[in-house]
Length: 257
Ligand SMILES: C[S@@+](CC[C@H](N)C(=O)[O-])C[C@H]1O[C@@H](n2cnc3c(N)ncnc32)[C@H](O)[C@@H]1O
Image (cartoon, rainbow, N blue to C red; front, side, top):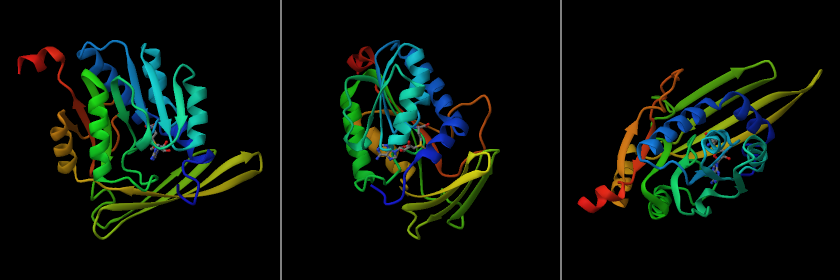
């Protein structure tokens, strides 16, 4: 576990109120993929489930959702936002993955090195676990950041200013481009004349897109790589960040091969 808060109360609340579009768009894509595969009910496992935004949409569409997240503040928000789903606090690397129609990991959940075991070897192990648990036609949907995420200089800054909070992030990529360190400072209003500062330091492993594609293919998935989750309100394209749609063939097609 990191020594600073990780998606603590303030960052979790800001994620839920202002950065939920990605999960909503991913949920729309997931429901359409499951519909196309004829998988109209069953279990969806959400790794790094955050504040439960995808879980809520997918539960409302009639699926069971199990989420796991390492941040207890995120799990608390998720339990309120998606009460029909079940959430557990822990590392996604150890999450139980029952028989499922889909497994998701959105918002770079697989990049975070919150769990020191995170890395390409572990990604390979997770892909195998997911493959074994998915029903024929099932989907593994996730997004990851790759070397270059921090731009050509290897350093990037973001500043967001809203009525009740401001967030400043400084990100630095390691010279070998395998790691991104993000230093985040938040000021959030806590009362009419008071605000509070919180600092977080996130470490992410950056994975080469082609290596991830190869892992998924080796494990037995059909793989499609997208530049974003399709959205009604397109986001500014992020460099070196991609969405992976990894599908298992439906049983009838598998038998014909
Ligand atoms: C950018 S947020 C995305 C949350 C959610 N998937 C969404 O799209 O709204 C990344 C999430 O991954 C979680 N996370 C990071 N590393 C994790 C780990 N090893 N195990 C479980 N959750 C993790 C964080 O706590 C956080 O909630």
